[in-house]
Length: 343
Image (cartoon, rainbow, N blue to C red; front, side):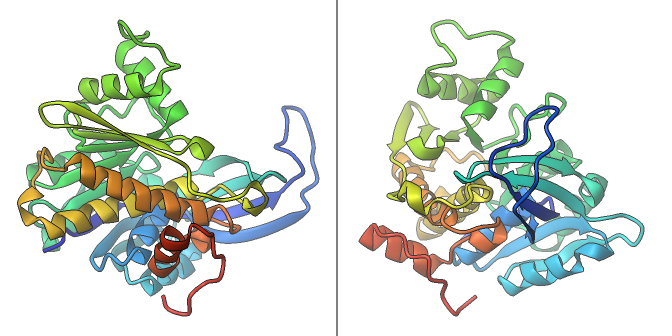
């Protein structure tokens, strides 16, 4: 049976402003377009996992009355929303996003109800139908991150953590099975772990640094997303095995918005790991030592092509592709921006 996915999720209203360039300190800039979308790293990853075809995705989160439409949207993807709580006197989190003409973005957050999540919210959700070997997905956009991890580990679950934004107050050594970071997050975590460069390694060597962080944090898999340079993965049982993945074949002229690409990568990656474990039930377990390099490589490839499609559309949730689109892209190596009629 395929492990279920529980997402301890941030839920945001994204306000997206199109600008000729990212605003500079002291500068006033006129936006050429404003859009509003559902967002939040946890929401995006949850919807990506659901759209990948995973049938058991549960979202744990909090919103204000202004975010009811997002809960409805999440439900429409097939994800379980029973543990999304509406707080009458708190606003839904907000993300203010600038997107320049090249598709690059800059974001600042107002946490709102996301910072009212507690370990009790995690306990109630996981007590309902979680099982040993299920996955808990987390980012750093909510409160009670480490507490939720501890509950998951105590229940024999597997933990995938995307520590964005990096926060030195969140220390999760020994609690994470799979760590997903980008280059800057990797470097920042390394600085926090060691306070300086480790012996024999430099911050310019991403692969070496990833191996060091994996050992420092005692996790079994680390995946580093490298934007247009692709991604890098390392997995460990007795030996550390490195996997390199090229970027999906998306032309520069097709890139419209990179906002949700990383979250799409995370959601598809988690869902594919779970799917592969469902094909090999003996691999399920909180130690995750049996997540083989071939499983990691497969999940990275699917996630890479999914995130490649995501950058061809505006918005975060609106850009997350459906599984049929990703499968077609993997087959033809041609990015198809047409959306399917199914959920």
